[in-house]
Image (cartoon, rainbow, N blue to C red; front, side, top):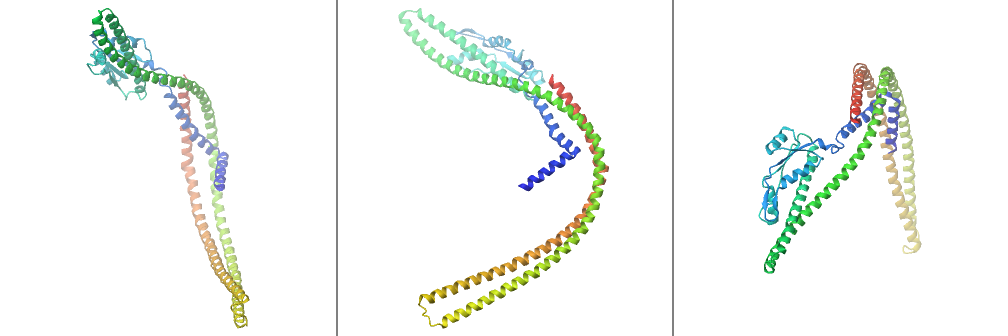
Length: 437
């Protein structure tokens, strides 16, 4: 880990000492970030000016007349409410024109209220029909953000319809109760029973509608919170654009200075490559001399280790002979084999032989390890000498090739890249200025 950190610090120092490398690194780090920033800004607050997003509304509702609510034209009441709403650019047109406008790209979306819309609304209360529905057309290819915004428009229409419907039904129920109060006592009981049943059904339907309205209101509240947050972010982003323009100006000055330093860098690098080729040739000679010295030292070390190993083997053999003599003397003694003294001496002799065997194993392992280490050292020295010789030859050829590449390809391409970067910097400055407005 320490070595990796040291390499990282070394690379950072080299980049800081090299102007061209520093400029390229900063360019790669900053320019894409600024480009991404501009891209994000363009899509940051798509809901800030949604009044220009045109949404067609086609009211085909014919209205209906019911004994419960009288005449009801829910489609026209919805249109009247939408004319007071400026969240989207509502356009009230016939159905065919609305559909064609979505297909041609004139409108982002179209909402069609069918001709039986009011009658189906009444049917949800009386239980004699299906729930009403509106048809929603959208052009998703025209704009990636518009579908999400026009979804809000559809929700707004749904809210207006629910409000109108609840109000009409509630008025009708109140009217029925008042009329039932003027009937005779006998008729009152029958009418009251019917009204209560109808009222119970109506209340159940109203509770369902109210639950739907609560869900819609919760969604709208969340949308308002999101819009407020987006406005705050827009203010912060405007400040960031000003800072970015300052950064772009500094980058332009830095590019001009970089162009001046480019030629100096080229001359310095070519001289360094020529000097490196000379040093590699000298390094090859020095490594060959050092390899000979190392091999000679390893041979001397091997001889010394062989002498030490031979001495240790001799000592071990002598000790074994001594133990054999002591064991024979013990067996020839007058001591009782069952006596404690005889047993202790026998145990000590057995322990001594055990230690002697262990020492012999260690000596054998020492011989193997030292021989392997010396041979590995020799192989490493010879391999290192061969590698350095090969690398020196290849390095000299590579430096010659690199010198040709730098003068013939790299420097011309670098100058072209600086020109391209200057153009991109100017374009970015123009884009930021446009976004600032």
